[in-house]
Image (cartoon, rainbow, N blue to C red; front, side):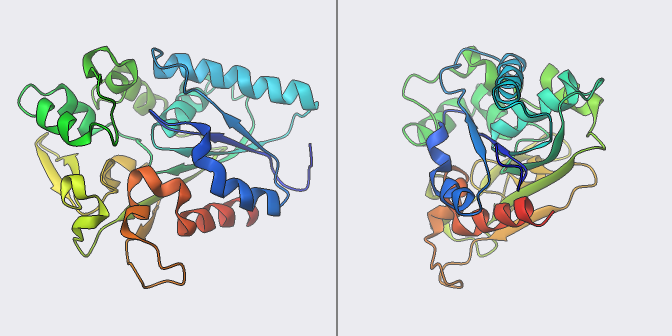
Length: 267
């Protein structure tokens, strides 16, 4: 393993796969940064604590195979951040045996998901699931039996455990999100360019401060500034289409990748 840069662990999100990192990998290769893609796509019936234990074993395997005892950077998308944080803060938090320099969360779920609540809400469930079927959820999606969906509800035991554990002082946390300040519907057409979230009094509301699936409010961490990349089609040299700013496409967004690489190389 090259020691010129801190090696990187890549952790994808829910209903996703390691292929989302293809464009980022080109930049990691160019920078000669070693990387490893953790694949939990086959652990569909597992909870966040169960997947985090698999991630723990995966990292230990890398260290053993490469005779490596130094720190890692971890880049994670969406629910992958919940998996990573549960491992580092709840499982490994007391002993802090895993050496991690920074966690970079892309559209992370840090405080729980309003969508997870909507999936379980008798009044809104069918409408929300129907809108997202084929894009974000599968045809046979059953939220009641999906352990991960239950784990990211704001009042779940997993979310309570994360709040109780708190952030690790030996790790730098980065949070990269997008927003739709111009209220452009094509940003995420399924919700007219908006994102569902829960207000302080627990009511559902929509906001332009989000990526269509995760609101910026849900990505917040205590004392950590949000790195917001607003949708602005035609205003940059990449001439990005609006859909590249939405939650699903964020790992492929050139501006997001540029920000990730800055964090990985500017230490």
